[in-house]
Image (cartoon, rainbow, N blue to C red):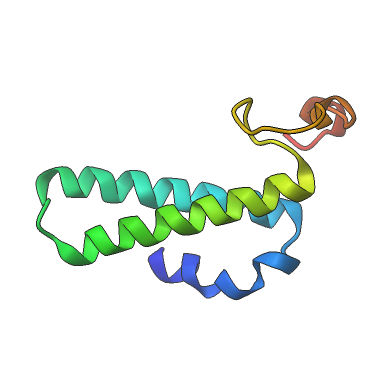
Length: 95
């Protein structure tokens, strides 16, 4: 899975919305799993490095996504509530 995440790093600027969400989910999953692993292997430098790298990449990807599509959570500052402008997931039939 770690290789899959890194395969698409260069093309995040051209990535469609659905792919960006999937990539965000992949990074979230990898970070959580690495965190659990690091609970029992705190001296593993490779895992520590991957955790830092994926955390940075996740932040960058979330920033790119939110600049284009609006906030992912209530904690992202924005000028307006963009999710009110679009259909809810159940209104689009994509849930």
